[in-house]
Length: 193
Image (cartoon, helix red, strand yellow):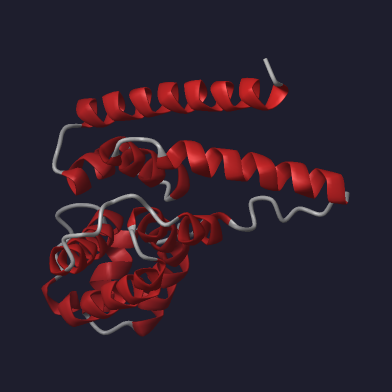
């Protein structure tokens, strides 16, 4: 029984010139990386640029890759650094997340077939969730997006954010509490109570 190679094995193979290994890494991580940057970027037009630059930077640095942490953490750190670089050039930008970019990153979550009423309800619920996530403090939003939408483990998020797994657990706990409160408040407001 053959097992799939790990991301780290694929990255090492890619480092040694195996382009099929790169294709598999791209297949595994392109969607998650896009969602992560879409939620973090204050400008919609930066998302594609940052994602493309991240893959290009990975390609340029492939000869220096060492599997000291997870490949995904390595890739996301490249993207995160690129975003920080862009934001330093334009200090007026804040990490508020572009709702349109984030919404596009999650489109498809409500694309199941169904009645128009179900589709409308799903879109409204998704919009509520997006609004609630955007109200979170940046560190909590980042941890939540990395875990829930990009699938990173606590340890990977901790490495990426330069903090401990316990701090990440705390951020996630506070984020989930704030989301529940925000969604409950919005639901009550819509119900007119």
